Structure formats: structure tokens, C-alpha cells
Image (cartoon, rainbow, N blue to C red; front, side, top):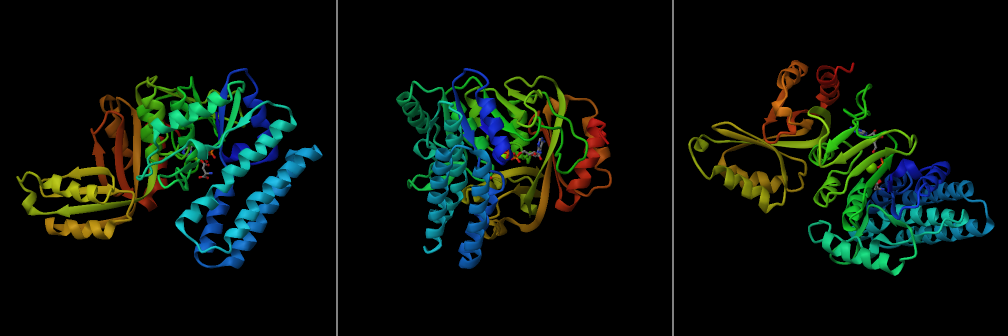
Length: 437
Ligand code: ADP
Ligand code: ASP
Ligand code: MG
């Protein structure tokens, strides 16, 4: 059971979590995020430090510490638990104050970002003690590992986690941190923003869980982005493939990589609402449940690269040479469209863009469009569903579309547009595909 930031963000919400995890007798691992707002606050502290602005960092640390003191004042009642919580807060904020004196580095940044999940789990554990819920806190830093390329090492996670669980066979409830991990150098690291979902899925896969429940602040995966579009509805069931596409293409409710471990080990995932625990939510399993379009999602920060060359005409090996450039810089490609004389490619990570452009230039003219968004239409067998393309093009009639990708899989149609057309596009698709105004 994974609980996100808002699900633990207020003392009364955290108490609700305690009720949800004690509802039945089943053994479970409970994965917690940091309290909502904490990771953002830690990012700000890190940014101030990286800019050498210690005064601001100091103020930000103090404000965050006050927030935790207030939080515990409302969460706990017994003097002994209040004292335990005071010591936990002191330990972690002393650490933050000490780092003010150390020179900033990427490793230090990761240490700072880890404080949120360490705090939330320790404080929750104090609360469980206070209300006499037997449990065991297991440190994610002892089993969650990533390799040189930031990829989780599922084999090693499995071994380390089962050893930890073996040592505490008498326990039924285990609490651990989402998001944080150890890297190949043994340093504290993380699974990137929103990574607690990924932690939960990896843990579910590692222990072969009967279900991986992702508890959040909405009643499941909706058909469209509720932050952008007014009227959206929850989806009852998605296949792993559909959910993976939605997560990867921007549905914030799931971390982009969070579906593959569950899919690979066939662990069903349920998206549930802490604010409305009785709501059905969304089941993600091997079967899609139904055919047709299920949802649309959008991913921002996309760069499109066009390589144009008449030498491409009737040539073979051209695409291989282009792809090799992206491989060399470990930059993954999302969308591809080709014509006889040009190829357009999108990437979401432009760290190595200057080097990539330089190496592509010998192949032809290279054009770059930044600040693009991919809008993905996801469903089951959608390419076989009647009228889908007609409805999509109808919705897009006033929108300048840069690329269209159709037929790559049966689950996805992707469209590339300028970021400033995203809201209009999602709204128009909501009307034409789902009949929701
Ligand atoms: P948590 O802190 O629990 O991990 P997140 O904020 O990461 O929660 O994810 C939940 C949020 O995702 C929702 O509040 C909603 O605004 C947003 N979201 C974006 N797209 C979707 C979608 N298609 N379905 C449901 N929620 C979505
Ligand atoms: N606390 C982390 C974040 O805000 C991880 C998570 O919430 O999933 O990104
Ligand atoms: Mg999240």
C-alpha cells in the first residue's frame, strides 16, 4: 500500500492512513511519500545552497522545521511520543543545518531530498506506536538500489528485502520510504520526482504481492488530465500496457516508469482514493477490461528534431546512423515520423542536445523545435476502433499539429503540438472522444 504526499500531508490524513492499513489482517508493506510540499521545499533549499545563498536556505529550513513541529503537535498526544517526535525532527533538521556549512554537491543534494520520506515514515511509526499498532519500520536505503544508469536492480532488491522481512517474521505491517534509494556508489539517491509509485511497484514485484495499492487524492486514473480539463471521469480498468503508456506520456497520477515492475511480475495495481476509500478506483491488470479509447494524457518539455536530406531518398542504413547518435548519448526517442527525405524525432531529455545536433549535422539539415507537448490517446485496440481518427482530427481542426504517430502500437495515437496548444487540445479531445464538455 503506497500513500502519496497529500494522503499523509495533514495530521488527520495520516490518522486516516493508520485506519486504512489496519482494516484487515493481511500482511502488508506500507510505502510512504514525504508530506505534501516537503520535497518541493527541499528542492528549494538545495537550489538556494547551490547558488551559495545560505541565508535564504537557513530561512527555508527553519520554516520547514516549524511546519513539522506543528504537524506533530496535532498528530500526537502522549508526552512520550511527542518527545520521540521532537528528537526525530531535531535529528533531521540538525542535519540540514550542518549541510549549510558544507560545499554543495550532487551527492549532498540527494541527501537533502531524502529527508522528506525519512521524516514522514519515522513520524508515522511514532504515531502507530502511540495507538499501539504493532509494526516494523524497514529502511528503504537497505534494500532499494539503482545501478550506474539509475535503473532499479530488481534482483538485488528482491534478495535484500526478503532477508529483511525474514528477520521480522512475527510482524504483519512493515513501513518503508518511497522515492529514496542507494546508487551504485552506495550514496543516497532517488527514483526521480513522483518516485514513490515506482518504489511501491518495485516492492510489489519483489515480494510477489497479491496487489499493489496506490492510494492518492483522486478516485483512480481519469480519462483526461483533471488539472487541465474540467469534466473528467474515472476509468474502471486498464491493461498494464495502457497504464504504462498513460504514465509515460504524462498522467501524473503514476510515475512514468512505475508500471513495468508490476507488469513483469504480474502484480495487479489498484489506484485508490484516501479521501474516498469506498470509491471503486482503477484496476490495472493484464486484461484491458474493454476496447476503445480510454484516456488522453499530455507530456510537456518535448524537443522535436528534424533531419532533412535528399540523400535519404532510396538509401538504406540512414536511420541506423541517426539512431546511433541518440544511443551514444543515452537519449531515448519518444516519437518518430518519416518522409522520403526527412525524419522527425522527439526527445524529452535535452541534456546532450548540442552534441546530438553536432553529430547529426553531417547527415543533413537539422531543425529544432523546443517547448512542444506530446498528447497521447490511449486505449485498447484503438487502431481497430471505428471513427477514432476522424474524431481526433475533428478535435484538432484548428490546432497546428507538428507530428502524428499512429500504428506503432494498438494502444496509442500520439500527436505533437506546441506547448501553448495543450489546454485547447485536451479540451477538444475531451469533447470529441468522450462527449464531455
Ligand atoms: P500523490 O502525491 O498521491 O503521488 P500525485 O499528485 O502525484 O499524487 O498524483 C495525483 C494527481 O495526478 C491528481 O491529483 C491529479 O491532479 C493528477 N492527474 C493528472 N492526470 C491524471 C489522470 N489522468 N487521472 C487522475 N489524476 C491525474
Ligand atoms: N516525495 C517525492 C516527490 O515529491 C516522491 C513522491 O511523492 O512520490 O517527488
Ligand atoms: Mg505522485
